[in-house]
Image (cartoon, rainbow, N blue to C red):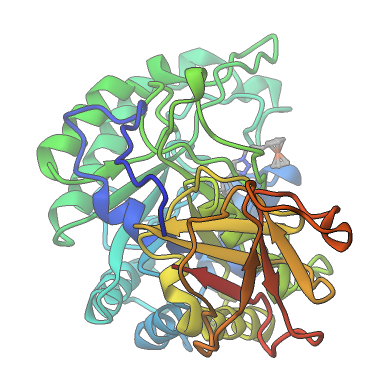
Length: 434
Ligand code: H79
């Protein structure tokens, strides 16, 4: 097709970060939240929501036994779903290490399962050719030196809030030590996903934490020393790195002056990141697919989350969705991988992605017989459905032509696609325009 295909410059990408081309190309990743909270099975924040102290939370450590966790199976599900990278929680806010850290006893190798599960997961994902991202929480509700703030489980215990009892520097040394372990002992790590800064919050007796508290500049330097090709997200509060809106689909994510940014929509299947047994908020596979497409149509990546259960299995609700998305991806890969935003404005209820000079029209709601595609007259040479390569015939209306009375409601610069009355048997049909 005759469309512009210039390369983009991203304003949130510093020169000393790794080359983001693989990330921008791959577009679709799998987030995995797995920790002690998976056994609590009521959202990964329940420790702080319910103000549970360490002693009471210890039962989740004592009884943690994911005996059905087969990393190879996780990797196969991921691969079949069509993701190209995986971001796995190494440590969430609860502070539990999913690897054999030498810096704490609060780790997976001290539980009943005894194995370094992170190692198994990383190996299995790599075997499937997937890139590796580590999620790591800056927040730590287990560490005795982490200064209590308004998001901490002990926030109401006034006697414990005293700053004198806690030394944040000691915590940061620990945090750095764990990052050093993770970025030294597990081979090449492609993406580090820190979580998170909240310096704008003020609880009167304590400010939220940001770049100064995390000593973010030092952390960033350490990460780049250990893994020069790594990508970083934006949650160190340094105003750079991959932007990571969570559970929110932005209208567009271009910064000032309409300049493009690298960004990633992080979404759950049901509103919870950790396994949530009694959850009734499951999004349909179609909705999740639309969110993926919508994201790519805005130059973003889509990071879709699963929360395996306390035995280490991916529950049926998640499996059904991964499989449905995978089947669509099998047929529509080339409208996602290597695709980006198009300059053209898509027809109503549709999204465009563009790959080189091919345009992909994703049809979210099936119209009757025709779609009017504005601005494309004279540019299109061939059209087909992507899933079965069947031709889609079209009519063009040249602005110079004399328009007859029956055609007066047609925009003169449009291409009009002739569609079957019945929607083809795929969840989101895509038309490829050459
Ligand atoms: O790991 C996942 C989440 O646990 C973590 N980031 C993703 C990837 C995260 N969740 N929320 N946040 C970060 C931002 C904090 C939101 C809060 Fe709240 C609103 C904290 C207190 C009010 C949500 C509602 C969590 C607790 C209550």
